[in-house]
Length: 105
Image 1 (cartoon, rainbow, N blue to C red):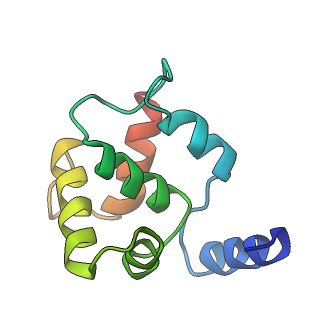
Image 2 (image 1 turned 180 degrees about the vertical axis):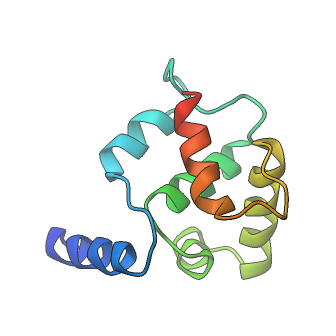
């Protein structure tokens, strides 16, 4: 996807109430060897899914990008929520999960 298309997708995501974080920031923070890397309790696949969440991608987009089923992505997302302490009744849990993760890295 080109930079123009990335920008338009980011604008659409933000205008729909989503959150978009610069992909370069996401790549830096999700590196396994980064001192600011993700919590050790997340698997490599969960970190990958969380990185895509942080870029504002939907579960369907993540599934397509990672060649996973929608159910597999949903399971990874659910595991991320549990491991980062986001209960099911939490408002805006997806956004709060991303913000919590960045706050601890």
